[in-house]
Length: 160
Image (cartoon, rainbow, N blue to C red; front, side, top):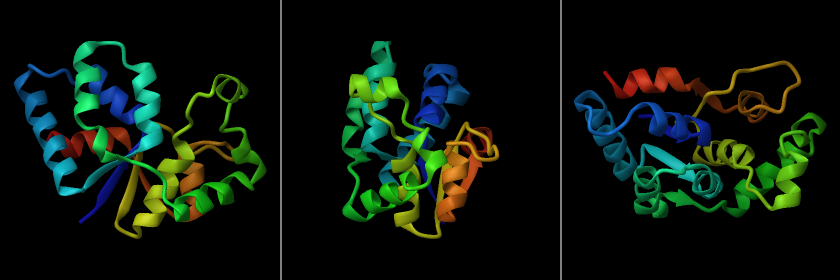
């Protein structure tokens, strides 16, 4: 059984485009909650911090706050993996200067590191696509030998 580590953008897209109150989407959100409770859908604390700043509507904020305990802090092993990623020059571009100046979180390397620490059953779900020499999640996944999938594949899995 796979454990899905959701990228911030993938979760934000679900919240924006699959609104509660529509029966087929309500079933999807029930599946998401079941997966969260079962531990097959997981998140990192940095994603929570990003979403807390990005989500503007009360419904999304309420959903996020109710699930805060499921957004886990990085372990020592994961921090070492993040440092390993940032030792590679092109991944250093992942942290925008404005993020550093404003103290804004950057979840991408923590998402990939969390998946790596979870082992072979972990799959990163991201909207990003692999680009040569880019500082994107799929590139980081390849660097650490982590499986990743497009968020549309994940959405299809939820709506089955």
